[in-house]
Length: 104
Image 1 (tube, one colour):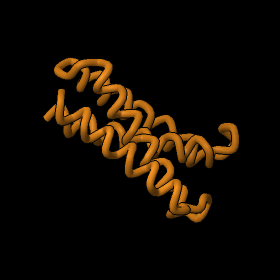
Image 2 (cartoon, rainbow, N blue to C red):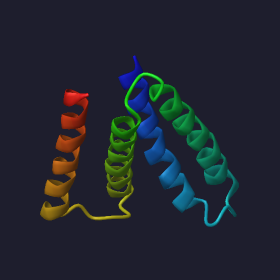
Image 3 (cartoon, rainbow, N blue to C red):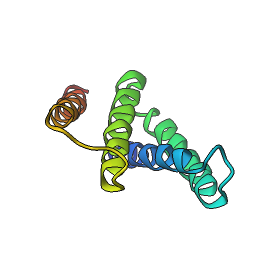
Image 4 (tube, rainbow, N blue to C red):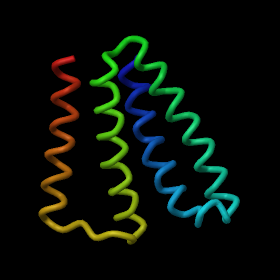
């Protein structure tokens, strides 16, 4: 259960990072509200997951999921391009996150 919450919290990290960029320095209300809500959910989930998982591993997994998710959201929104090198590096990052989960 803690791993599921951690994964969902990592996904919320991608949401808040994307919303933060869209908020235009907190001048746009909807992205700003989405940022605040997703940030709170992401942090609460990370904190809860850390009650049963090693802090370093939990944080690394959370950041990895958030980073990959943020890039993928930007690609889906056509704000960034995904070339071959970036795709390979993102796959390596996903592999590292999976490896951390496997050994924890």
